Length: 287
Image (cartoon, rainbow, N blue to C red; front, side, top):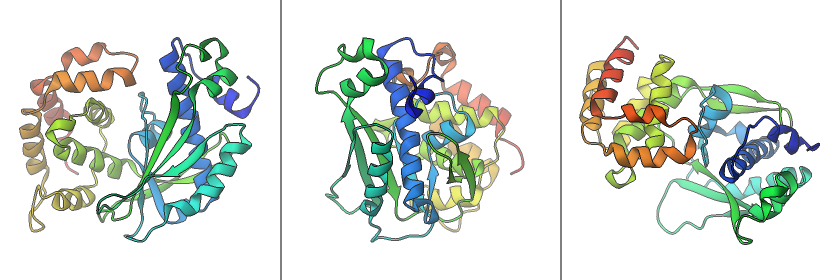
């Protein structure tokens, strides 16, 4: 593999078609970031979420989508103006993908688009032995989504991406990323329990990450969990998390995370007592 994409894929130790697919998706995600950077996207937006945590902070799990937030609210934001530069970047790397905006069917602050390309075509270029083991009509899909009405208080920093081409990416800092993850743990709907949220939550705890409490409060107020006049203290946050951990379906959470990680042995520990204990040990400290 001599292309830039091939060079990036050489970093991966893959042993299955699923891992090959994930490796392809991850390097294409990074190509998307370069294309968006060339379009000037990061002058008005920042990168956050699980993929940001993987690329720039070392999270050891696969993440499917790319999440962004505008720096300032803009209900009229036009995501499609980035598509031309994005398509040019992807094509220059020898990849064959189309960019398609998701139609808005209800009032929402989210703007979404998909990058779509043939799994077989791209596996044939980089993992030819696996190419014909996938359905001919299977697609690689990379979703990217922009929040046009971001909660206040997020903090940012610029990170350097060297491949597939050097560029600067505006990213939420680790405290703001952690705030967003705690919000997801507390507020994601009952039918959408994600083991990925819990896995990432432990990643932050293990690194003793601080929490951007101002940003977290703004998110919790927006979600109706607390009122604007509530003093979000560490003790209150611990209580909210304790209550949440007592209600989660951990078997469902484990099923969600398994396809995204290699080492699944640690999932045996997952239950309410484990998460409550970890939270009290690693999160109950001055912010």
